[in-house]
Image 1 (cartoon, one colour):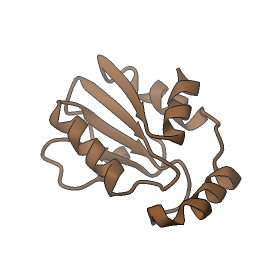
Image 2 (tube, helix red, strand yellow):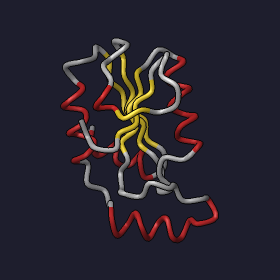
Image 3 (spheres, rainbow, N blue to C red):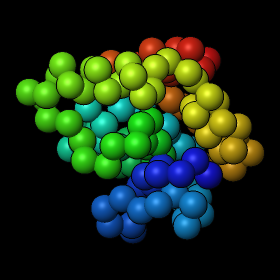
Length: 121
């Protein structure tokens, strides 16, 4: 499993490291965050998909454990451009790992995450 991937499933409070949990459903969604990181908005999106019966995987696309605030847009964009970019390898690796575990696997991206989802298709 990709390091620093957050996993959500019913019966699991908060987010847990995905490598320690097994599948609970037959469907999974990979949520790709914005330039800000895994913030409250992305966590709410993950919980929303979880209520629809999906296991949720949210890979941390960059090594920044505290998400940027929205008012830090310029800093967040510079950080993303310098440290992440649009290499779909993290997403395609995670898709490959999960493909055999689920009947349905979707990717949902927000902002730059949407571009990564498109490049991973």
